[in-house]
Length: 340
Ligand code: MRU
Image (cartoon, rainbow, N blue to C red):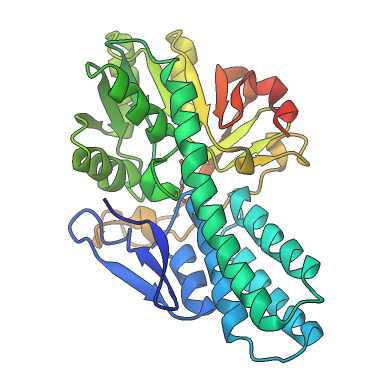
C-alpha cells in the first residue's frame, strides 16, 4: 500500500500522481512553495488530499518561520496560508484545512513557539488520520446501498489517492466489494487529465478489485444495456442545498443516470460540505490550462491555435442526487445542512 500524503524526515512526502500509473515515485516537498506547486500541478489532487497536504504544508511553514514572537510568526504564517489557498479554488477541503490550522494557531498564542510548531504538526497528522477513519465509515454506510451483483460506475478518482487513504466513492466500492465479490466496477477514463484511467484503474488493480475502464462517452451505452445499477462519485464542494461540484463530466453522468432510473450517489466527508454556501451556483469552478485538452501524454491532439475551454469541475444539482453518503450517515441531498 502507498501513502498519498505523509510527513517524512521534515518534509511533506507526496506520491507523484502526475507520474502514475507508469512510474510510482515520491516527491519530498521541503518548503511551502514546493507544497503549493505540488497541489497546483496535480502531483497531489482530490479534495480531501489537498486539504491534508495544505495542513502539512502549514506545519512545515511553521517550522521554517524563524520569528521568535507570536505576532510576526502568525503574520508570516498567514502569508503561507494565502499562498496555499491560491492553488486551487473549487475543493472546499483546502480552505477548511487552512482555517482549522489558522484557528488552532490563534488559540495557542500564549504558548512557546516551538510548542506551537509541534502542535501544528500533530494536528496535520490528526487531520490525515481522521480522514482515513471517516472514509471507512463512509464505505460502511455506502456498502449497504450497493446490491449484490450490481454494476457500479464511478467518475474521476475519489480513492485512496484523492484522500488520506481508502477513498470516498472508492471507499464505498471497496467496502461493497468486501461484502459481495460479484460487483462489476466501471471507471470513466475522465478526460482531460485521465484520473479514471491513470489513477482509479491503477488503485483498484493494486487491490485486485476487477475494473472495466470505459471512455467518458460510453456510460450511456452501458446504462441502456442494463449493466449499471448504481453510480458513486466523490465531491469537491457540496453546497448547503445539496448541489455538489465534482470533476467535469459528473453532471452528464447524473443526467444519464436519471434518464435510466439508476441511483446516483455522492460520497464525501462533511469537510467537503460548505455549510455557508447557499447553492451550487456560487461554487467557483477552476479553469485549467488549455494544454491539458490540447495534449494527451504530451502528444498534441488538436490543431494549433484552436480555441479550448477547460473547466475542471461541474455542479450536479441536488435533484439529480439520490443520496449523499457521509461519515455521519446517509442524507437526502436537500437535508445535508443537518450534517453540520
Ligand atoms: O482535479 P482533481 O483530480 O483534484 O479532481 C478530483 C475530483 O473531482 C474528485 O472526484 C473529488 O475531489 C473527490 S476526491 C475524494
